[in-house]
Length: 71
Image (cartoon, rainbow, N blue to C red; front, side):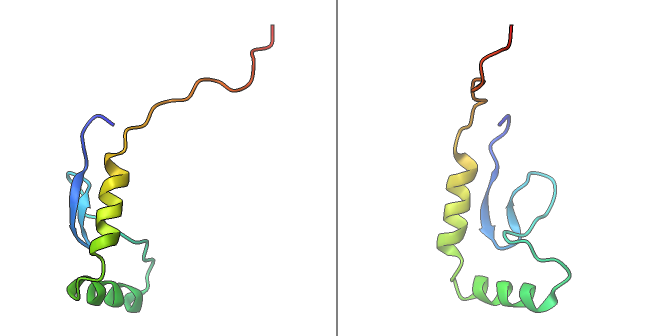
């Protein structure tokens, strides 16, 4: 990663520097988004957001090739 992601502050604020995103995929489902908002308001997403922060901060590298080259 070139730039560290922003920490998740709530269900719709985190990771991206310039774009807004939601911590869970919600596709045209207002009820699901409403439940996510409720869970966030009750503090039930704190551990999930902390886990997403940990994943976002994990360094990654490109693995070496597994298969030998054909000569």
